[in-house]
Image (cartoon, rainbow, N blue to C red):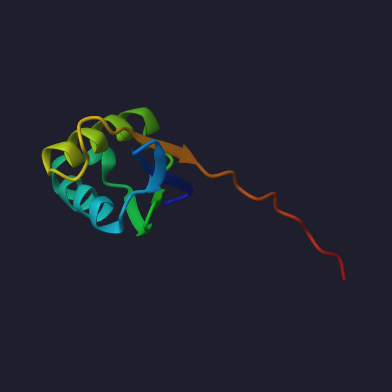
Length: 95
């Protein structure tokens, strides 16, 4: 269900920083009941989430940025960036 791993960072003083788990959790819990398109989001650590295959990354970014601003977490001049982590190639070993 949570097949995609993404990095979530915000900009502060010209630096990219991982979004705190508290922020990610706040967004995911709010959306758990209010926006079904984002039900398949699971915060796992600072700057890291797992999401379902049907979650549109661009819509998730916009919704998270809006939510975090309204909560007072994300300053107006900061932006959120989401990037899907590359999946490691599966290898098979022969014994």
